[in-house]
Image 1 (cartoon, chains in turn purple, red):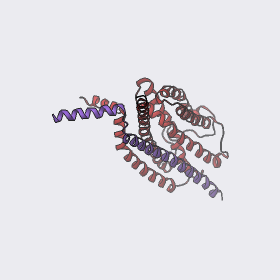
Image 2: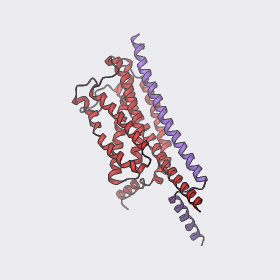
Image 3: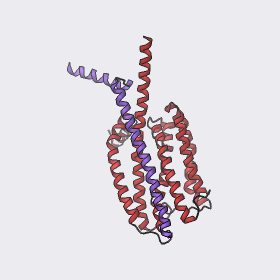
Image 4: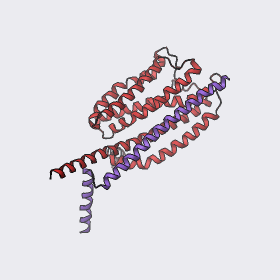
Amino acid sequence: MELAHNEGYVLASYAITAVAMVIIIGWVYIDSRSRQRELKRLDEAGIRRRSARTAAADQTVTGKTSDA
Amino acid sequence: MTDQSLAITRFSDLANPAKFIALAGKLIPWLAGVTALLFAVGLWLCFTTESDYQQGETVRIMYIHVPAAWLSMMCYTIMAVSAVGTLVWRHPLADVSARVAAPLGAAFTFVALVTGSLWGKPMWGTWWVWDARLTSVFILFLMYLGLIAFNRAMDDPSRAARVSAVMILIGFVNIPIIKFSVDWFNTLHQPASVVRMGGPAIDSEFLRPLLVMAIAFTMLFFTLHMMAMRTEIWRRRVAAMRRIAARSAAAGQEG
């Protein structure tokens, strides 16, 4: 009886830890996917960061030089 | 280029968020795989090793309680190192690291508190006592929540970074208090039995699953931390792109 009673504490500990870990892993994963989707949407709408625009322009210039 | 300067160059390359994202993309699947494998082995050991002659089955709570408690302190220590990186070197990723570590630290501290309480009831006869170890860990949990709330309240992450870094460094005083509280004060909590002078005081039967679970929890933390850092960089990029879009729209309306 005592053993069964104590096993409840063990199972509760593992269950609560599992739930907490699933929540934190799920939250990190969902947040990551959401931001990725958001970036893709903005990129498709033609919105670029200044550094991304500069990098793209540099690539174009380099491309033209090598063509010439 | 010497080996040392090459190593420094490679390390400083990580200050570049784009290079960090590329590295994270390569490392995260491996880290996640190793973490899953360690948890599989660790959990198998947790439930196949002998029970303790005094504590009985409740000794199995130790395999999750102790790693979670270690992680709660390690996470804050990483935040403190990141805070130094923000204040001294103004490393672009230091603030990102500290900011995203806080919810992870809060989760591990929550697990340490709850499993400790569930272990305390059958062993001590009480769910909770306001002794030095338990109270200092509870304060750590509140500090994590406070830092999360502060970072959420501030719109501009770069403005929040320095204030947050100072708060983290002030709060770091709690870490040695947690670690040595069992030596300095008369507490219900037992003294250190693994990381102590003279080596571990627990039997290898219990030490083996404990160490495997500790490594598994640590790997889980690093996997989640790296994922969350990458997400935070993306979040800041999205905010920057939205500002550009809003400015373009305003300029278009004026024109």
